Image (cartoon, rainbow, N blue to C red; front, top):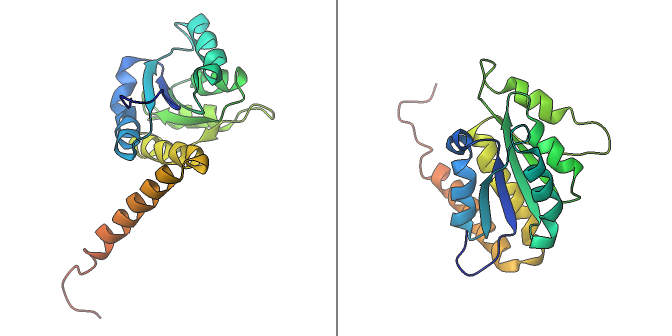
Length: 169
């Protein structure tokens, strides 16, 4: 989290082992200067804490919640059921199904309890951070400019490396 600001994005996950998958989200939020917090909030092992966390997030200044879960993937949906804040779900490849089970659990939310669902694993975590930053940047022009610069750097990275050698056929 930023030293000078209260968190506006939350990155939550069901267990400490999920941090391996979610670290790109935290790293990217830090790189973009988005104040955030990272917490373990288990839907199955600490349901009362999960409900308290979800219901208090808005009053604590959180504007977007990134929720990761593997297997049954209840965390994103249960958190979404307890808050009107945007919840972005990241499926974690934690079981023999490599995250497909979590993906299906998150994407198949019932009408009325939306969860924005991202890709399985680290790419999903990174994109969740970018999407969260985009959402909160609407009223923060300086953040919007950092996002533009970040995206422009990715474009330049590709353009610097377009020549793969060889001859054209």
